[in-house]
Image (cartoon, rainbow, N blue to C red; front, side, top):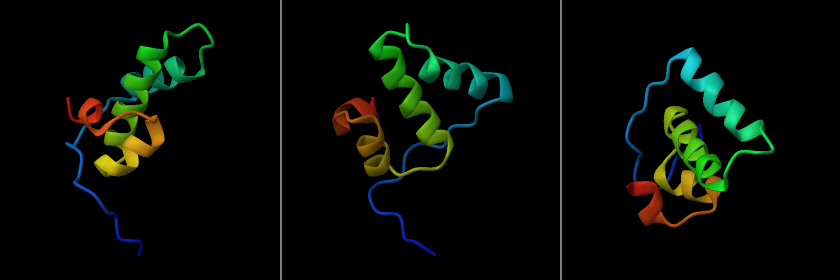
Length: 67
């Protein structure tokens, strides 16, 4: 079992429709970059990733993730 490092992110629960919508934002080539970043953060938190893992995944600062 791999130990997660970093402060845990807030627990986010997404409905199936919300998850599909956010995944669609990631796939769409016309999505604004700010929406893509927010979708990555929300999906990472919903998947139970730590704050450090979300920062690495979304390539943003810790301040942005913690907002």
